[in-house]
Length: 541
Figure (tube, rainbow, N blue to C red):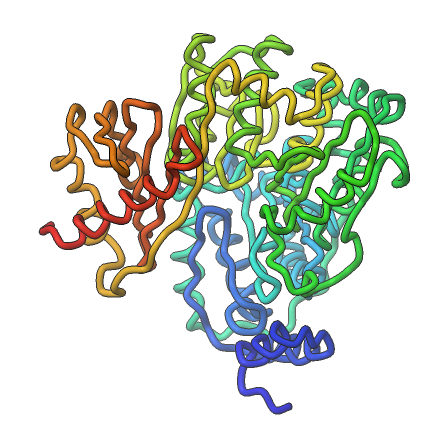
């Protein structure tokens, strides 16, 4: 077939799972010199392989990062955690990739350009985002560049940049990289990258050492439990880079006690979106239900290992619930003190647990990087746990990155310590603190509305529905007890239910996050969110 673009080729590949056509995608990726607009989202720059994410454009973004690392700006150097460029060259940069198409080849381009500048390069090979984050601290590296688009579909690749504290780069850094990259896009750059010079590192070994040093989880207790207890642990890797990690973390071979799913190479992920969704979790649930062990723990992780969904043989446990369980476990069973941090669209189940325990709750904008002020070791107020409804979690004294491997280990330690399956522990907490039913949805709006105008219209709802007024939910009028405008607008109601309307800053979309106290009322809350959105759009700025 004669394809005119990588985009056209990807449509056929994804529709018919024609893996043999990936050689055409590689040709587009190597030969294309078309520039793209570089935008760093909540977690890096992403683009379609062969269309936006090409070898030429990866070179440009890498050169932009190098230019930023050469900065003489004191504020930027402080944000990066470096003294100067000589400091960067000496401390080095960690480079890794997940196991998507062309990951090693893109990483080699990055390493060649870093080597040319005299920068020490550590190569992690196929690895995960949380391992790289831990390795930055273990090696005192200046930063990292990871070739991964996280949980995006198979036609995407991406580039994540983490500064010296190991966390996701903040906007003060990524905006400068964007500026540099977009300024360089029009310039002609050499097409052949230099041969890289690097030192290979075992990121999993360093990660295990990091866990042992930090002590937030009891790794030996977890290993002993998996080895000796009547248990079954099932992990679905969805053909991602987390493969091989559970065996080393638990110090046990896959078999009767440890079942591993979808560990094979598959650049197309079997035709599914490689995310820890309820639908993708069905393979794990099936294996758990077929087992007969007393304790059964299941997990599914995304390709770069920063998102996780958990389950046992009774129910699935999304992060809205597991994050709250983690707070209770770390505070009550492990005696870790501090506060809890969550994104504003996350369930209030954790609030219900935190309040009677006297634990402060902080809500932030969407994006794990917003948790950084509470995760730093020198923070005046440190998080016991930090999590977001989109499957990310970290905790006290752990990495600033969300970490699926940590989530799995924490779940096993919960079961080992409490002597209860996850569903039993969750029911115990809900019986004591109340039942909460979160969900999310959204709608598309007229393209002309995207951006600041839509945001203003949504925020204008606060003046029409102030604290103390009522909102109609189904056939009930409920009083508004609190309004939060951190990221969109969130109305908390007198029965503990809430709805949040969050407009996209770049797309013509409005996202709804809701929580009811009765599962039968979820659709009523969604309908109210839609009604208020329509009302806001019709109103004036």
